[in-house]
Length: 428
Image (tube, rainbow, N blue to C red; front, side):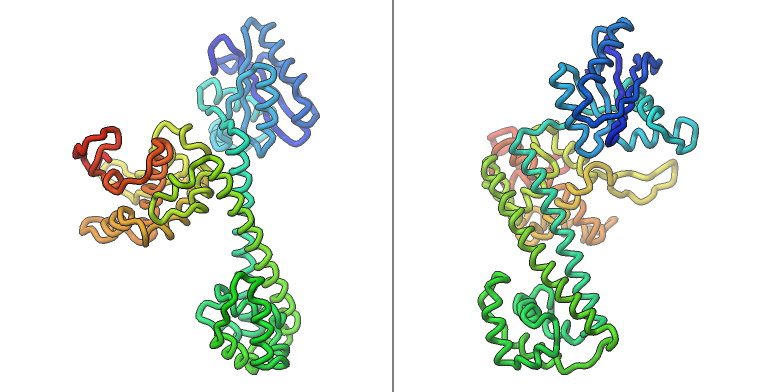
């Protein structure tokens, strides 16, 4: 992709200012150009770079840029239309190279363009993922699900904080009030107002909640919660001056919580439909404990797993691979690299919580890591290790197009051999 016969056209992307630097493989600048336009208007500037490269004695040009937002995808399409290869440079590498240049954080668009060209000449680049429309749709739906998951968490935290200030007794009406549909429905019909609870009375509150519950996805009332909430309405604890405004705001937060959960469910339904279109649902859910939504969330961040050379590459892409810290006689704490896609790491971490109680292989690995005599791991460390194992299992299942096999997952059978040949557990 970066032959010596091609010059390197480096592009520093921005909203409406694009800076080009054309260099050879020794980082000698052949031409520079600054264009004030949007990314969709860069066709002429890209052709200018190719013409300058030809004039300098090269047979072509390779375009290099940082993957900034979604703008690089526009550049990728323009380059493909012009028959030019696009390679991407990791922004973290550009940041490190900027510091290594003169041990400062001096930054300008022209310097960044030259650093991008230098990193490309050193082959510190990667080929961008070019997803088909189905995989691209799954990624966008995954991003939407993450957005609404964040809003659900924010609404829950805000609701709890406000009630702890204005009406703390309401939070004692259920063991897990924010997860109780009866409690939510009761708080919704009363506007989080204890005066309204007292006005309705227990019988009136029960009838109002019975009518409200279907909107929250349930029909069965848990009467002890309503009785406890009715009792809590007489509790005057809380900051009196803050109570009217805080309770009104709590009602808004509860409505936001219901809306965010509905939007998240809608995104999850669409993600599972895309997974069905890719014919991956049955394979992914053959792994015990991995739901269709959990698999879709992982694949939305990873993309098509067949683009990875190995399961190890997928784990490194998630930043779950070990990072050793030792020198000479010193042996520090080994942690995960933390590089790669943070949201892929988060999706795998969340999937582990559902998989551990139902997946015997992962449960046995977790028990071994936390219970071994030498260097036992903590609960969190073991779950991180299991998250990497889950990604390896998912990679094997989807790329080989075969259902999950507990013997292969345990390392007792060679997946590349139909015979029951014993292989090393460590190697597996």
